[in-house]
Length: 179
Image 1 (cartoon, one colour):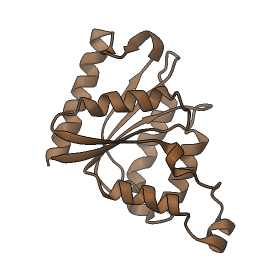
Image 2 (spheres, rainbow, N blue to C red):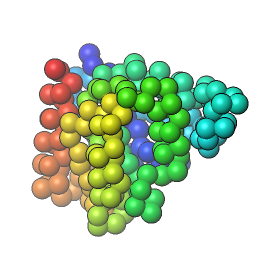
Image 3 (tube, rainbow, N blue to C red):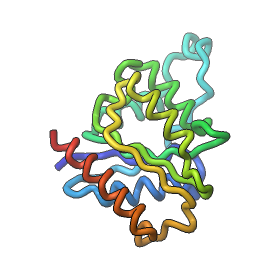
């Protein structure tokens, strides 16, 4: 059975992106899901001087090892001021220091984003889609869910057209896991 890692790129205890990533991972058939919380991987703010003085923090290595242990990744990106959250960008900076070209391990990635607004994190999703391939990110599908609180419930996406789009993205991701 394939193993996938899912997480929301936020440190909010009520992260809608973590909830969304967990929901989507639970809908990828024939997989075992590991749901990560970025609060479990607290890191100092990246700086080259700090890295030279103290080396890589243990939590950066732990998260890198977690990435290396899975066959696929589901990330739901929270958007702060049109970009990555500070916690996610900092994690990304630290783990990229381990092996920049294969930060994301070349495994299939389903990139998601959601927000309360009508654009659903479209800016941060575009940024990640452009950047991840330079860091070993094999982005096989992406999906943005606008107006999270209107469109999502514990049963899933309320809008049939959006649900159908998401199902197609999950199917693409599932097929990539099997290759």
